[in-house]
Image (cartoon, rainbow, N blue to C red; front, top):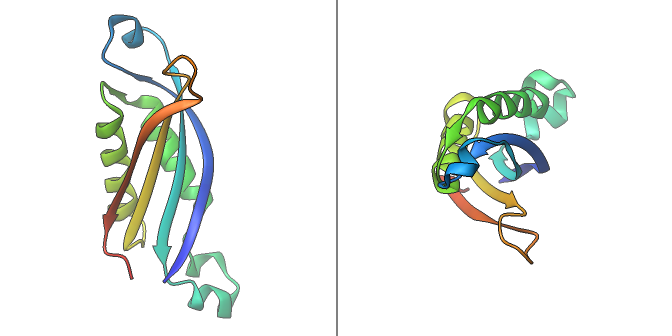
Length: 118
């Protein structure tokens, strides 16, 4: 199994359960690990044979910026579903960090794994 990853993708969105959180955009940071077989791409040296992480990141940014969830759990599930359904990925780990949500902590969030690893 090969992993393509994306680290610290920062996106502004409306997220949270409190009234004040529904009125402002907050920063969410994503780390994504995605399982895919890179052998064909390594042999051909062409982008068409691999996971295009630029296209993937644009899709995730667009979705998250337009979303408005109360829970980070829901947002993480939706992002994982997009990656599994729209890209050639068998497994994904989504680490979502709600930056600055708790005083004294750099962030709080969830880590989920979906799909079949291996």
